[in-house]
Amino acid sequence: MQSAELMSAPYHHESQSTDRPTFSVVAPVYNEEALIVEFCERVIAVMEPLDEPFEIVLINDGSRDRSLEIMREIHTAEPRVKVVNFSKNFSHQIAITAGIDYARGQAVTVIDSDLQDPPEVIPQLIDKWREGFQVVYAIRGEREGETAFKKATATLFYRLIRCITSVDIPVDTGDFRLMDRKVVDSLKAMREHHRFMRGLSVWVGFQQTGVTYKRDARKAGETKYPLGKMLRFALDGITSFSYLPLQLATYLGFIVAALSMVFLLVVIVLRSINAGEVAPEQAAFFGQASTLATVLFLGSVQLIFLGIIGEYLGRIYDEVKRRPLYIVAESLGFDDRGTPSSRQ
Image (cartoon, rainbow, N blue to C red; front, side):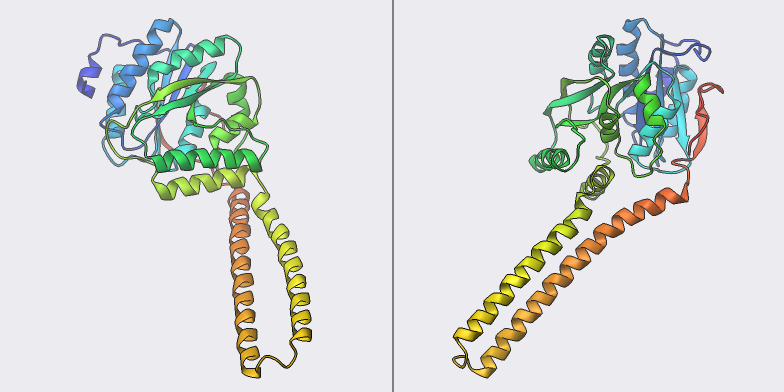
């Protein structure tokens, strides 16, 4: 269905700005002009039978296609679809943060708008919420359209995070999850810039459980997380919840120091035993080669750990500047009560 058809769809409702919705569905949007109408239709189709007030909060994260234009048309036809338009691209995790800031529901579901995560799973998350769980994350039982490399690296990353931190992030989960208002309010108090939302939602605690679902292949467009962005995302997750990379410098320093002492003792013993049996030129050659290899090894290790320290230092620098997490150029469908009081 095109956006023009959506404007005349039979489920047009009056704005519910005066009533706090029970459910909010938050969806970041970046260059999804081919899917955004279908996404809204499917979300509305699964939310209306619940017979509870709801809203859909779309965050336009600097799209360069017609996504914003289409979202404006959808909002005109369906006031329950609300739009937050960033002044530029601020990243997927920041878009989720803005959606959480603006969402007013007692239960807030975060889902991507590319339809790989089917909206039809949302009622299952709501059922668990009604049972008393405050965070309900969606577990990818099957993952269509993803390469074996991506599946393997994702599994390895979550197991690594679990080993080096105290944050037990469930394997095979993304940002698709439902959170109770208490969890949302706790997350809104955290304003760090390098955000790893799926880690933060676990870190806050509360009663948590999972629902297994089948993740669909992308229907249109391109992935928003190529390998480079995935590596940066993984680095944000590790540095947000672990000091182990910094501690490795100390551990490796002690190990190298111990090996150096052992090597020194071995050299002294061998020279004492073989004194005079090795030609001077051979001794000079092997001595220079071992010295060069040792210096290059230690220099490389030092540069690696300087880079690690630089990553942590850069994050500290970003925090002390206290710039806002995002800048909103336009918002549609929010009254004064629906607009967050602070976006720092």
